[in-house]
Amino acid sequence: MATVDELLRDAIRRLRAAGSETPRLDAEVLLASIVGIDRTGVIAHPEAPVGDGAAARFEAAIGRREAGEPVAYVREVKEFMGLAFGADRRALIPRPETERIVELAEQEVARRLTSVPRPAGARPIRIIDVGTGSGTIAIALAVRLRVRRMLDEVVIVATDDTGDALDLARENAVGHAVADRVEFRLADLVPDDERPFDLVLANLPYVRTDAIDSLPVAASFEPRHALDGGVDGLGAIRRLLGLLPEVLAADGVALVEIGADQEPGLRAAVAELAGGWRSTIEHDLAGLPRVARVER
Image 1 (cartoon, rainbow, N blue to C red):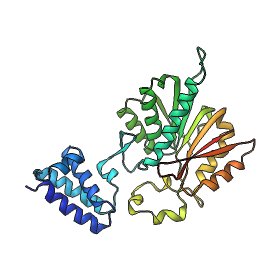
Image 2 (cartoon, one colour):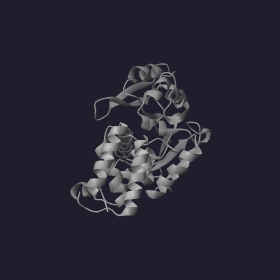
Image 3 (cartoon, one colour):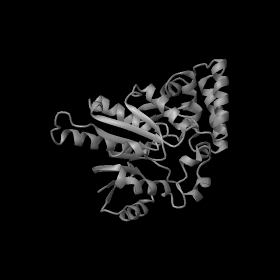
Image 4 (spheres, rainbow, N blue to C red):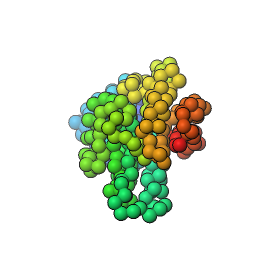
């Protein structure tokens, strides 16, 4: 029976040879997932024996990672804002930089609910998550608002243009007990019958078409349409911006994730909107432009 150390040493060697940038981390995370403990436990007990069944599953997992498949797909789970989300090829893997949209949205909801007294019977704040994928933005926001006792004051709609992604999002919503608080809709961006919204959130495809093939091999396992943002990466984002005059309430705010090099293009696209619109750019933890705040 092999030990943790023996399995890890062989796996790290194989993953390093396969070109993984984080071979040790990948191996430790996968082994921890298979034996049912956290990564710290794997690191702390290198001498622990691993049963033949678990060792065989680990071998299969390493083979998949060796071929370039993302760890999140191999594990079928990805952490986002401290929550575990189901992850598979039906939707893009959640990125940590997308957490910034959730943080900003939570702040905006809190500001609207606490800055001025709300009259009795006031309508709820209407929020839409456009291109929800696995549902991470809408679900994480719902969970955080529930903790703050604000969830009853909002209505959250989440859309995607693929039914498979929406199925995964619904599964994640059930897992976090917010399936009755987020309405998932099949739509190209925003449904015609749901407008207007006070808060529009969007993590749409923003990778330039000619850059997709140069991404790390792991990205080739993800849905291409969830990455491909067209010639300049702003194709889907520009379409959403064009809808804002109809979609966004008079005092509404749109929070749109962008690539780190897309601030000039985003600002130019907003400047082209009729009716007087402005944009400000929020940065991520690395100090890079990440979320565009767009409003009248």
